[in-house]
Length: 271
Image (cartoon, rainbow, N blue to C red; front, side, top):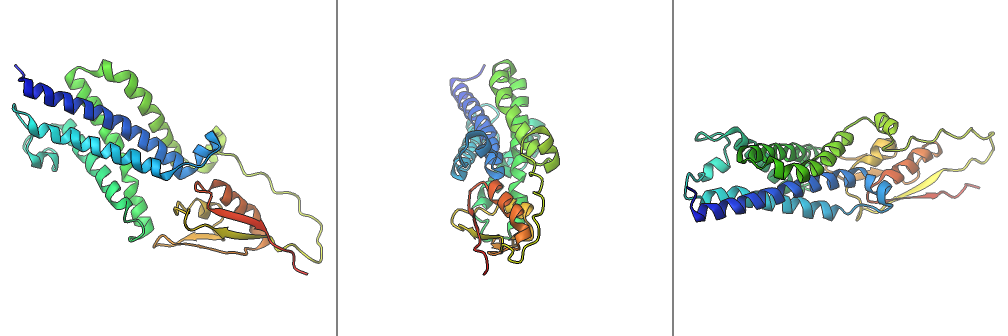
């Protein structure tokens, strides 16, 4: 017989777990849309990185509340070390998945504030572990729902949120030519035929970057590696007056920038 106290604890654990599940899926979706700039293709507006941070913080907070609530059970409570070290003390696999997933999310959240003080590439690799944390947390939620007999209740809302998150994550890491094929991004227009040579050639374009808006996602570097380069410490180096033959790549880099931090102007012709 479950005591009234334990019943209330289970209610808190269930509610916080479901809210954390929803917030994790939303944070994963918004993070992909922000990093890739796809949200502008959908809505015509740039994504707010702060929205992703709020969703991720809310997901981690509710997930911690879900885990800590099990310490308050009168009947077979979890020990504090079981919330840190998975499978220690005879824990179940589904609990271990939740512990590891939460630890990965915590690591990504903590290091998000350190990206300017550590090597950018090292931070980006660690931050991407948050994807694994989300999927481990989702698997933990589904196994927990199965063990408690609530799969039918969780199914509709759970699968509705999970499928977009899975789809966007898969698309996030597909090669660009496959994304063009499925219509997620547009193919680069074919180069215009070369005009007849003239004596006074146009010098091309002039580039300016708003460093206050730039978040160093390095999408510009992927489009125009001869013009843009993200250094190991996270700083962006770029050529302010690139060669004329780099103009198409520079304009493509400005289009894919999620933060719209790149400005491209026509350079004045030389006399």
